[in-house]
Length: 374
Image (tube, rainbow, N blue to C red):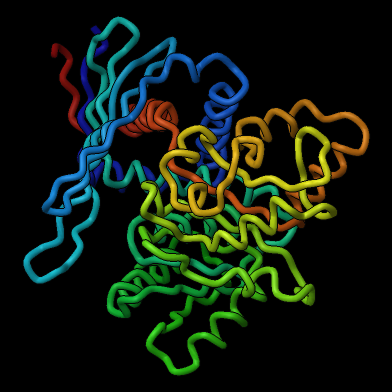
């Protein structure tokens, strides 16, 4: 028996926050390989469908089983019902892993893992971008916090500003204080982190200006309506830069972060986009096209088809192995400086890849409780 490792929330946090840039890059590469195997390899057929249970109380529970040649397991995430005073509690859950023979190998508190894995994958296309100076981040939860942390850890020397947009000012201020203190001791980026208050009388103008200057926009809120209008991005053709936009907050058909008009404008772009079939149209970058088609408000309200999307695992393969003729140059330009929108709902098997990475790193650092005979 290999034994069972149990990692608490504090142990997982201590591990992930202390990773070096080299270790983060290696972790990210393992997730990219996992997505490539899922999109263009054989792994998709071996992944059971996830399940969601919605209770009348408002509680949502997500069940994500996964398998690989070397391990099997599941993740359970609970989005708690609102409290009596209307407050929203953070997501909680566990990640349970067995080896290929079914022997338990790890139980990991999933609160940090989900946010870290999701954020690190969202930053895969961000690492391909030419410009990384100005960021806008929607949200103030774990997802938003890890997006900022990882951006500073990976490209902090290039980042000049991070603008946080969130309805709750106290939560936003708390997150900004946390990440500013961490940055001062860990990554030492010259970036300024500021709060954009939605209650300000000049909010719309300030937001439009921030988005117009943004190199990357990270959306992490479970919104029921688009969080900014498409015109703030596409304008009337006068835009001075094209951002990378990541949206990971909506994961059910009644949830939506991005304006459908923005997605349709990208798909209908005949000159600046990229399509793997060499068509005069663009595509939306996604992690799982089939799941996004059924489970996100963006796809439903935009009436996207699978042909309007390209999976990031496929793009990883195209970048690594090249494309023929003009397509290669077109892909490179699009990824580096085009208007790229990435929509994510999560791929179950990346939880497995993340869990195995965390267990290996914990073993090196002697973290967690280990049961030799379980």
